[in-house]
Length: 282
Length: 224
Image (tube, rainbow over all chains, first blue to last red; front, side, top):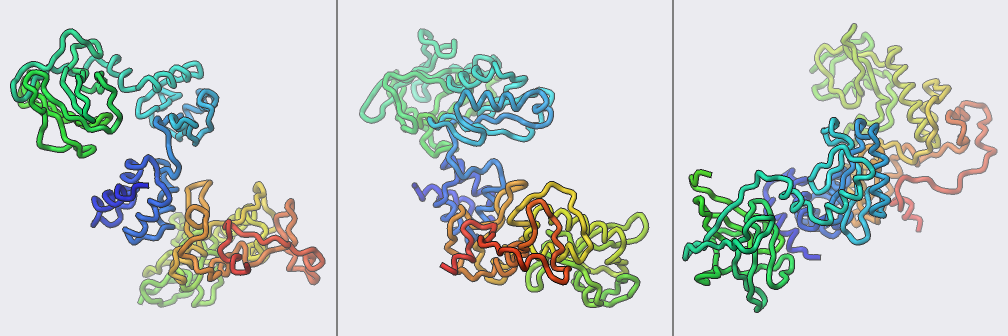
């Protein structure tokens, strides 16, 4: 158990008394749940009693004392969804995922839970997976939803939504285009850069659709690996000054042809990015 | 000083006095379950309800938490209050008929029936033990956990708390487990046995198992 993570969270919240829920939310974001040892550290550091913290942690549904799966699947069982067959859908999820409501699958992929109302009763029965809403769900669609989640909901949504912005980028030093018209990701030309990590040196292709995080690379890059990114033309490192707002890793900057700079996090799996368009008429 | 009227009697009290204290000062009995002198008022059991105001604006409030106000008109035993108290007692009997404290209160208030589904809970969530632990023992070893139907009292993670000094204060104040009515059968909610000249529970076998809402019970561990 890494305790320095919880200490950094507490340091961030130092001084704001009464911000226990905010602290617990941040702790949960770091660990995925609230481990008992971490709650004890929170109690010691904030001077609150463990009983009070445990009371808050068990009171709110969004705080969990047990490890959760990679995907959170919430089946609405509010009145409107209930009469339209939400219990059947929850049962179908239980069968398909081979787990119970409130529990996590053995492979730690799914956590299944029921919620009381999502406030979208007209669309019921509703299932929410990782923030993606599925409306008018019936039991035959359950398998499809699980399959879609396994495939990656973010990719699925890029295909469905054509409003995402397609950008053309170039190196910030030599201004050569980084686009690779011969190689397509998400159906549009990919961005090609050179990456180096762990003494490996190879190409990396990124989707040029804004909002898509699809990548292809010569060597498989582990999640959380921080890579150095270079321009394939002038071999300059595409580094930028600010750190990633999500994970503090260095950012990679590229010039957007329409005018502006796009910065992406150099950590594999991190979705931190910044888009700064300075009046480019976009 | 504030002057208020309780059951037609004018009484001057100091600012900050609760209606319960003022009524007891005058000698009007108000039953309580979750109130204890020395602990902060909580207003959980609703047994101490009184009626304040007049006419259509009259309302029921818990006297243990309601501060005295200038010119307030309070009735501690109106028919509406008595009806509400009886209902509260019926509900308490429905959840915890084994408690002698509750059975005695039910007898004293002439509760002769219990119309709800009978449960045999170990706890009525009055919070006396939590306040005792926090305010008098300054330990904060037990507290409320969860919410709604799954709300319960106990230690964090259901393990022995490091803060607990095994003082037994929680058991001492608990209305559900300090005294146990041994006569009540599962199907019989209202006991009233103590009102008889020869109480029927004398001949009955005593319960040998301790009942406690806490697992493990922090007070019982003293005996080990």
